[in-house]
Length: 149
Image: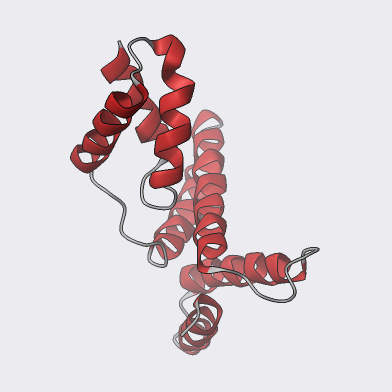
């Protein structure tokens, strides 16, 4: 079952159950999938890797919005955005723990021979390909910085 089929089935269930937050989150996912399918060169198909990227983008957008709403002290909007984040994250694959990410980063540092933060780009380039969809890039960058410090 593709992500689109799963979202459509879950959307129908959520609408019948009148779960407003779930419906909002699922509609956002569905919209992103439809846009991705109609992009030039997509030929109406979205790869599983692209699906994960879409979901991560949706989560990041909402987390950015939450940060802005916190600055403006808008707790009502923060709650709505957080509900959508929770719904969207259910469709993301399980993320790696910081310990697992640290191990991958250590291996990449050894492979590239990086010794200072000036060489962070080499390590990040190697690691971000390996951990695409499996770990948050901000976490990865923080770990790389701390290990190269």
